[in-house]
Image 1 (tube, rainbow, N blue to C red):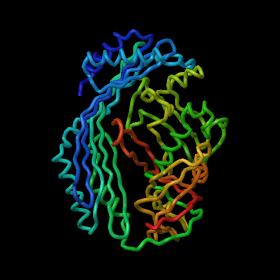
Image 2: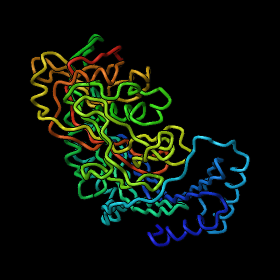
Image 3: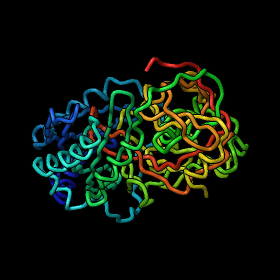
Image 4: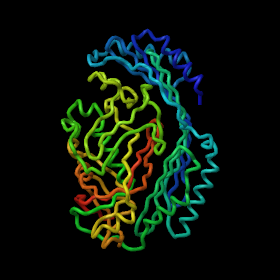
Length: 451
């Protein structure tokens, strides 16, 4: 880890030496470890220390980006020269206006010192305790326990100087017996919030000794747990909650702002400063994050912007810029769905015949403009009859419009959970979606698996 002073000095020196019209320098450092276990045995422990410096230079309206993992001044100068030479041969982007100018960023706590107590030995002891609890129930456990420290800094030639240090940890747990499996997950910034006993109890609560029943595809009332709901929200963010999708005419929001699109109980927003989530004070352009409300009591309201998409419309960025070059758009990464007034038990009791879904996997897009996705249920799918969970069922394929599902929400839980799959296979920057459980009065299942 470099620390605030050294990091900002390093980036400021690069920016000041740049002959480009405008220059941006981003530093991301990572110090992380990952412990995996399967069939109730630890089988892998890996650690990574890495840094990346991303340089973006602008010559007129010609733009180039170069990334290096070398932090020495001589290496950064070489990368800067490379970026300049690349920019010189790029076609101009006539829609580019400017890099952003600095704005005041509120000081928030995103780093907890006790993350350093999660040594490999400490993690092994915690996992062994978890495995003993599960083995007592004649079950096997698999999963991954990851923790890390990340530094993020952004400096540009217009005066932006932003730095933040983050801690994060996540534990994903799957418990299995011969008949079924159950899932539980945790993600947070403070290790003191992790309760492995509670996670074990949650995952084991989905285990059944009964053979899963096969039910016919069709439309059912469903209870979607927070894990499943968070996946729906993430797809909405990717498909249509941002300005680039609207500007390109591929968002479900296109020409529908001000229209009631989903049930009035549904309010969805993005807020990097909400302490109930994984706070992130500024984006990868150094702009403070604004709260953006996508659905306000069911009505389509607004979308996220970065400096490029904002410049197209003469607006200001909402603080949702991602690392350049970014062709995906200013995708929101701190999503929330407003909580409701029901308990999970009350929601289950209100169903005559329906399906309880813990989470989804292998989810893919079918129709972006209608937000239709398809995927499978996993790790805890049950039949609800007469207001009670009766038996496990074989996993089902769903094919459904997220918008249609949210237009049929009849209850939302009081409790919400931070959900995240983490960033195991990319640059480490862990964020989360805060989601309640929901009851949907009609959800379409298109097929049945053999498992």
